[in-house]
Amino acid sequence: MMTCINRTGRDALVAMAMIAIVATQCSVARAQALQQLALVCEIEKKWQCDLNNGCVQVKPTVVNRIKTSSSTTTYSRCDTKGCDDYRATASMSGAFMNLDVPGHGMIARFGNDGSFSEAVTLMQTHLISFGSCRRETVR
Image (cartoon, rainbow, N blue to C red; front, side):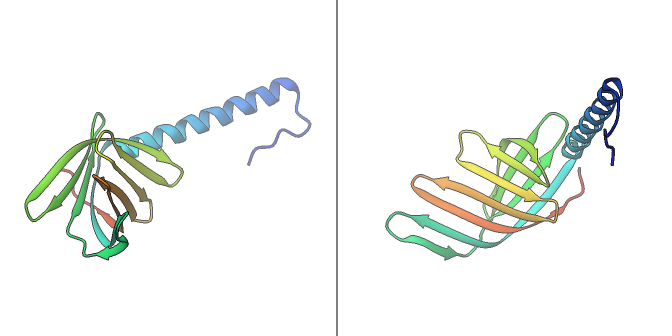
């Protein structure tokens, strides 16, 4: 750990510049981690919520697949009828990767421990899911 105790103004500026370089390198490493990622996420618990019935636990019927490259992120929701693919925006927030699917009422969050949560809206129904993800081989 670096300290700036009893340093001249010039040394303190050098120390701050070094901290800025390390912070930039960490941001680059996070961005690179998003470049070639493929996950399959299985839902373990799911709730369906609406105004009339409140929230009721329902059987999960969807598997999610996430693929990122240097230029795009695809969020796929797959069931027995096939997969619906959506272009998503990925961002890092601490130990979590957040995905937003603009215009479709879907957000998801992934922990570096494999945890997963998703919120999806369909008309006035809200689906809240929790599960886990594992890496898939990038094809």
